[in-house]
Each structure stands twice: as C-alpha cells, then as structure tokens.
Length: 372
Image 1 (cartoon, one colour):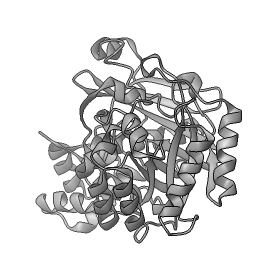
Image 2: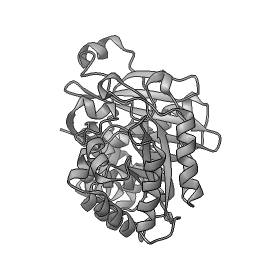
Image 3: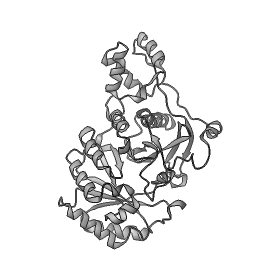
Image 4: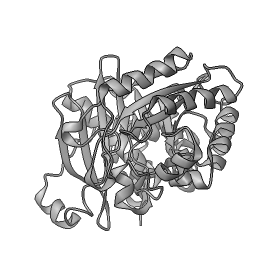
C-alpha cells in the first residue's frame, strides 16, 4: 500500500523521504510541487532526481477526493460534495469576495456535537477525516479555481474550519493539516487568516494554543447555561464560565488580539433584547474590557428537523445595536450560497439521508484538474 503524500506536513514528508534514503531538501521540493503547483504526477516534478521519482512511483501517491457534485451559486459561491468512502461524503464551500477568497473546510463526516440549529448534527456522526482528506479539499479547490478563474496566483487567501464536524474532536488530524496550510512551502497562509471554529471543547482549546495557534471562533449562541445546553449539548460538559476562561487563556497565543463569538439568531429563542443584555453582562464579567472579543451574528438557515425559525432583520439589527452600544464589536454575517444549501449550518453531506453514494458516483460527473 502506497503512502498518500497529502497525509504529511513538511516534517512528516521529510521523515518519509528519509525512509527512502533521501535528504530533507528533497521533501521541501516535493512539498512545493504538491501544494504550490498542484502536481499529482511524479514525472512532472522536473527538479527531482529521476531515481527519487522512480521510488515515489512505487511507494507513494497523491490521491485527491472524488467530486460527486459541484454547485455554483448566483453570488459566485461554489459548493463541492466529496466522496470519502463507505457511503460518506463531506461538503466544502468557496466564498469569493472582493478582497479575499475563503474556503470552508470539513473536518469530520457528520458531527457528534448535535447542535439543534445545525443540519450537519442532525445527520449524526460517522468518522473523523484523515489529514489527507482535510488537505485534499484545499488542494483540489485551490488548483481547480486557478484553472476555473484563469489565474496563476493564489486564489484562496483564507481558510475557515467551519464545515462539517467539530475540528477539535479530530485534533490529531487537524494540527498537521493546519501546519500544511501555514507552511511557506505549502499554502503560505497567515495564522490570522486560518480560523478554527469550535463549539467549546475546552481542553483542546488550551492544547491548540500551545501547538498551533490560529484565529479562533467559538460557537456561543446563548448567554446562559440553561439555554446553551439546549442548543449546544457540549455545554453540559463544558459550561460557559469554563469556556470563557479557556478563551481568555487562548488570547495569550492567538494571532489576533480578539476572539470571535458566533451567535446564530433564532426567532424567540435567543434573539430578545433581554438576551442581548445578558450577553453584555457576560462579557463585562470577564473583566477584560469589551474589546477582547467580537460577535458575529449569523442568520439561521431553517431546515424542517430543527423546529426553529429565523429572526427577522429588524430583530437582528436591534440585537446588534445593544451589543454595539455597549462597546462590543458586532457584525451581521451576510448569507452566501443559500440557493445551493451552502450557507452556515446547511452542510449535511447530502448522501446518507438522500441516496446511496455508490449510485451517485456512477451518475455524477467526477471533476478533475490536470496534473501540472
């Protein structure tokens, strides 16, 4: 069985090359070919010794994920459905904006957290993705988009680990994948432009700060434990006070001087003026001033199983005003890709609940990019 080279960060690839009797600089060359140039054909790697290329042909491969479908929104958002085998699929979303291109990546097939407002959680949990399966989403999207947009420079400037799954519950694969994204020989992304979103796995927040601190977004969604435990079951294990303490500890390592709290606006559930005032009091209780965090208010994208409805624009604006007037930086997320079910909370893998993956593979056009 050959090694999938998408599974390795640079240190891991160096160890692999050493096992073939090669020096570390060969790993750097190989890493650049794979991630910067999108190559999957060893013969195309012209500055590698022919002897190494022959070794790689028998001991290694660069295996992307089969693409089951691609949908392009009216606003330019692109959603891909990737087959990860055994009837599972994951979704990845590219969001173009004037000043950046953001890729939303999945970390698990399904999700075990089960947040009430998220359709991924209603699908249930299947398994963690491997490093290769996480990186393959970025590898495919970056090099597909360069061809699609006729560009030679980097298209994806930001990565958010906000797709399917709870990233910090797949920590062993998450950190090597982040290192590939950040490596100057890989995708060269800034730590400020890579964001991990978590529902609040407190011990792993601390560990991430020590191992690979990137921007952090915390799914809060409620100002008190009673409500948050209903919306985010993980709160029963790691209540808000513990979560806020972990967030403040993380600030010492974070690439920004603030963290983001995500707050999905649910009609008559968490969107009242009283709830906004409770949030203000919660942030004040941290005794760090009002600028150590910002709030991102997210429009809810309804789905039948949730039993929830979205807050009206007026309610969202009124809620935001209370936070802003208290000195908390607050933004309202613009919904993107909702016409292709690519908006926040809508990613559900699209396979287990609707059809068999094998039949989809036979019926869907599998999209490929040419080897460089």
